[in-house]
Length: 529
Figure (cartoon, rainbow, N blue to C red):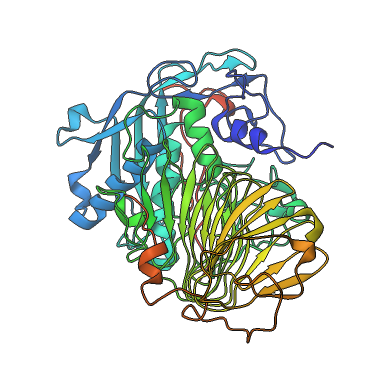
């Protein structure tokens, strides 16, 4: 049996395939059986046009006055809608007129959270066709008194589970099914749909990424996830793909390029708290952005971290593992590291990385990177391309994949050398050690003969090379900036700043078969505390 892919998972959630046709192996073709079987008709649904990847228009939502929602609760509902409209071409506007309400939000009293969806038709369409049903009305009900569905008060309540509940139910309102063939509860050992059917990839999943009994656990593409009791508070990678499968990418979005995610964020509006790490202090999020020149700023975290700037990957910080995802198509080209030591994997776009006070390990990509270690004993591999590398205070090492004989070293100044060969052309400042595949070479401190012309193959240099004289003479080693020819203003000279869960069903006047039901029979299960 072939293991389902991420594309298959997105098709299951949205019921629309990558070719923009109705997917038979999908939630809204599921017959409700276990083991799962699928009907030939698919009750896929969306707002707006009846074909995939088309705008959903503007949808009015309404808070039922009898529920006495507080201003804070309404704020979080609205912020969750704003997260969805930031990543997909659909907008949501609050209305005070019940007659205009397309989505009505009610405080439940039955201990559950559920969404009921009314469609323009209930017959469904044959898989392979491109005709989706149109959503006409939605009712969201959440009992905030129990099971972690409340209080809806922010990131600290139940590890963010109430906020995930909002995203989950609003996901149903968008037209999503669950991430697997289950409803109300799940046996992860038999009902998990794919290796991507987990909360790591989708808020529509019931399955925690640490559930070792899950059917596909052994083949997870991302392993070792540990969120320490926290839950996603933004749409995750598969959710974003599913939303765009139905509605396309947004035309207007606050995530249009030049955003700073994390500390010192420049994002404003209702989605700002999710990406501000002074507020969302243990973030479990996915970053999506339509434009370029974006920054991930982890500088306020004190512990060790791992940051991967490639789209479709996850980073680990704030004591959690795999808690920050980068969505496909998203460019994060600037990183500010934590103070506790960060292992960095750059993408191939040409990145700027500023290390912290710890011992950072930075690996560049194939682009032209600017990599600054900062304080600590840092290890920097510029990768291919023309890279600018600053070691900073401490004993810093630059890595090269080939033997020393494949490179040429030219001294630019008392503190800077150029290394070329084997596909690299790097300028290194305040680097104490060149580590080649066959040997290390220690660059000794020098403050004299700054204008002397030195040019040697790295193979000709001894293991301790005084680049001021070019003769490999024994000069007392030092890793300090002052002794390396950089004065107290070093940080000013080379520094840079970035720019910038039980669900109920409702009765309808007619009863279509299960797969065509206009009611969301899915429940988000309650957490166990």
